Image (tube, rainbow, N blue to C red; front, side):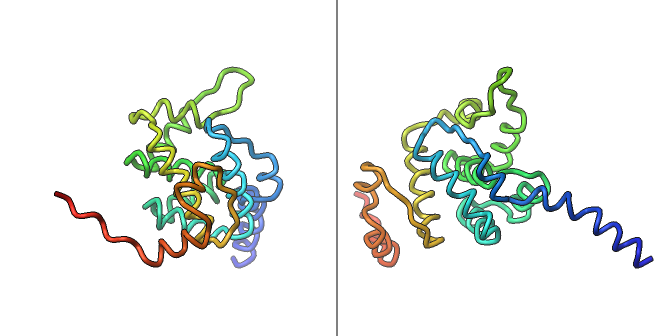
Length: 183
């Protein structure tokens, strides 16, 4: 009986290993959200998740408000790339929808013959029309995640103006300004 259990475990190992975020999967990862800066960061998030999958899962769960079990299943059982999980859940968060809705839309997307799936097309199919404020919120979330992970991130001029350098962001996080009084 113990032998049968061990055999079943050994048969599952190659399947489980194939679903993990690996350097090979990250190297082959191509993402197209329509925002080159976001795409670069999602590729970096893939590499981060290779080494620190639990921290990645904790971040998405905590700050995108998604069940850790759900995103762990996407990563470990369904073989989703970490960058796609991050984008699906944080995009859903900024448009005030469920991560599950983004995941379902991605899963239903069928690209043209010979074309890769593109988040840009999936976003256009979601029930909330994307605005500049949505993209801004996503970009800010990506910077915050890199800060939480103590991971370097290169800001473009707009983000630098909006968020400042890392030291300024840390000071702002430690001493949040009270909300302005409404009149």
